[in-house]
Length: 543
Image (cartoon, rainbow, N blue to C red):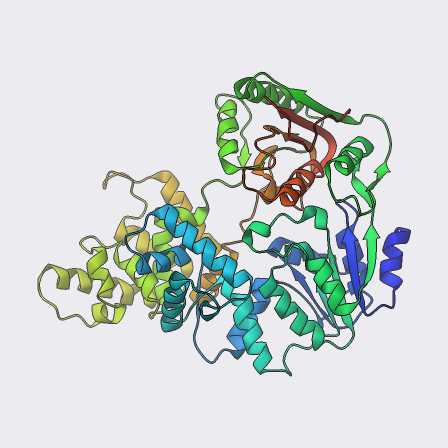
């Protein structure tokens, strides 16, 4: 049963509709119902999980309705229309390119340069449009070797579609989480809307706009309204949280021009608590004690402890050591960041594309006797055809022979097994001792490739590198950003200090949105705590 607000959206005949969907107001249900009323559309989401959910929830499978992430759509366009071979570079690959340009800079400086480049690309700017010399060198190297990063995808897809005006026409363009859109992505979306037959449908919430730091446009709704004179609808009935939690969220947000959320659930047992402790150690200790009590009672499905920063998770995690509760940490060391996984992926990438020089260097360095300087001066073809004498020639020959062996295996698991054995990838600090955790991770990598060709697997791993899946667990420790779009029976928000919300130098509105997102993840119980001085976002509240 749809609410009156949802029905108004579905039944509207306006060609361009903009839906401001508050937290927990049935946004996805409204989107699905709208999709079921039309024949041809593309529905954009910002994560693979969201795109899959839309596909699964469509009542009738329609071949003319496509659900996709922005990046997946762009990659499909690039593969179809680009006259050149391109190689996707993930976060790690992008840093390596910058390091090759600036070999003397430190790791933190590389991250700063990476952020600068990505923000410029998010604005739709090429190097020629800026005076950033690092960006210019980076762009030149990418063009030379056919590399593209994730920030480049929307720009390149836009250029290609501009050259092919008959491509990718849909009746409607749907965009979920519209508040997360950056300028380059919106330029692409606008191009698609302008060539669409009937109109557009965008849905999001300015109160949940928390990605300005990576280029999302803060005034995206106003831009869209100006461009298309959209009919604006607001969804306000919250089906997720208790009335107490909804009322607190309405107090937290500074977006007072938007209609407040209205709780659907108004029954008893509404638990919400704001606590002050003497210091952080006491705060973490008591918070953990409260969590342990809830877990022991077994009354609730899941509990989340949400943090503003990754470093705050580390302060809290040690409380679980020695207890019977194993925390599920979101935002820890990524699977693809482990050394042995990086090594195996590098080999798989050069099997897929022998001209991927960056991956070749990584692969070559896994062979004993090959140094970075030597690897940078040769190619995989040099190794296969090497007639060099001496130590370097022997190492090159070894690399070439290993490449020829694995290049003839079209099975990911078997390739990984050969690499593991030949290169001792599963061995720890001692060459004679197998590290069971490393071996387990390598077997997992092989299993991920089941039923896929090497090429399909390499593409899958590249596309998913920025969409890390979170696994379900009893007690989850997560940053607020990683928990966005999810819901939990119980939410704890520790360290809600004045100095933490907003972070020093942070945008006040976006910081307020982050805290709002945290409070609206809770379904039944919400606990907020601080040690010294409470954030302005909750200061003086009576709950």
